[in-house]
Amino acid sequence: MYIPTGFGTITPYFFVKDAERFVSFLVKGFGGTEVLRSLRPDGRIANAQVRVGTSTIMVSEAGGSYPPMPTACYIFVEDADKAMEQAIAAGGKPEMEVSDMPYGDRQGGIRDPHGNIWWVSQRLVQAPYSA
Image (tube, rainbow, N blue to C red; front, top):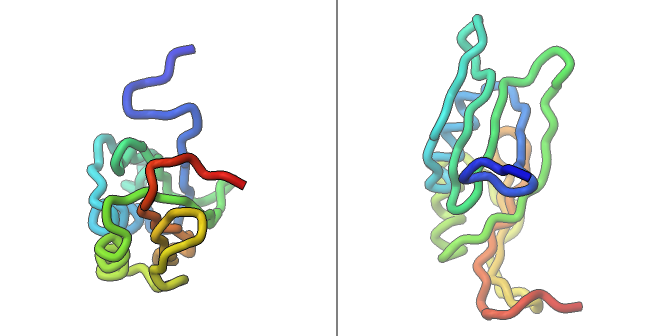
């Protein structure tokens, strides 16, 4: 099986209204880098690829057979407090304040301007999750 560089076995793909604004949120809110953009004839985003850390996120303008579909994502960061501040400054709304969790993460949550929830998590221990 061939998987292109920068992609994982599963890659998040967001259909959102105002994909341009969503790409901007990923870049400003999570320090992403836009690596590819293709446009539809109407000038809207047909497909954009944004690299955030070790992951690639794909984005398209919602419409027709592909309406907006909010989701939730778990994003690992170096500093949860700083990442939350950055995401909020980029337009996210606090969903859960940052705090230390019993499973070894320092975590908070934000809802982006498109209704997606992002669990912003800093792993405090170098160990796998356990039950």
